[in-house]
Length: 370
Ligand code: FES
Ligand SMILES: [Fe+2]
Image 1 (cartoon, rainbow, N blue to C red):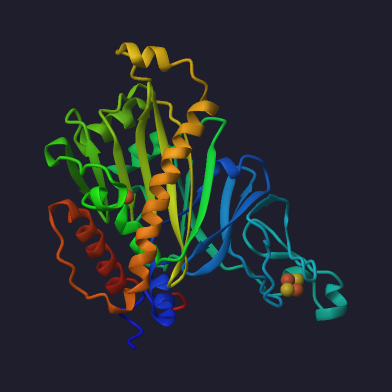
Image 2: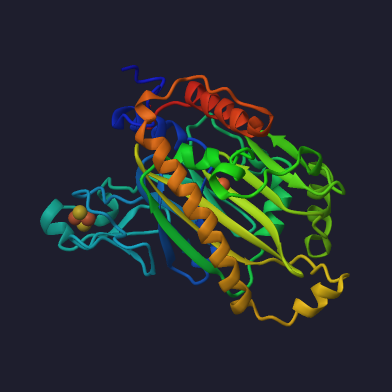
């Protein structure tokens, strides 16, 4: 098998590993600033097929590979927490730069002071858009900022991810490759067969493409550029024109939807676990956008509290999510037999764009360690 083009990364673990290493070079969503509110708060994530963690140090946020360079114990052994970076195996202590600063019995063991021991955590490059924390394993010649990577999507994602105090989390394990799961969110053709509801009419929505990313956008009042500009100028006054679904390459989906009269958002990620397994996790919450309260029904529904609204949203989101997951698990069962050239129709335009972004990334990004 070629180390360069992972043809069968849907099923082959070696090809999946190559794919993940290359994707680790691309800005990837790792978690939320809501989990980094206090000094020394940290969360664990996955990048490039590797366990990593992100931590707040005062005003800074830094990320590292989650492996101690002493004897390779994981520094973080749960999903999130708070505390200095001290390894649980022999208590080596690392600072905000990933430099070892404390080693028990150091003189006796190594004959030098901790600062003289050449042990350093492998750093990630970290950048934040709104409340969304992204990271990558950058090479010296990779200079594209997160802002440039997200393009017109940057102000929109920053606005949508302005978080309220209460977030509603969800998580599911799915026996399907992450690309199948990403692709089903880009597909507007499966509603009848999978969800037993009508497909959207093409006159009612537009597709937006920006960089490696794309969106499904309902509402004629906005173009990608006008929505982006409104969010940039004053995000609290932006009035969404309708449902939006942003797919941020490689594996993040950010949706904006109306839960009358409020605008809610969902931030969802498909985390690759192995070729045939993924973790789908996310949060939904009420956004800062002004409620749409021109209609009588909107005004009547307004007093319903967030917790009640969240139960209704969760019920419908889980039903749809379970149907999508089940479809992806069926796709996975025959993924080894899948051809390279699906016959994509108009309502699958974004699936094609995603495939182009994926092929481009696999072709151009170096492996980790190269
Ligand atoms: S493996 Fe981390 S201190 Fe030994
Ligand atoms: Fe679906």
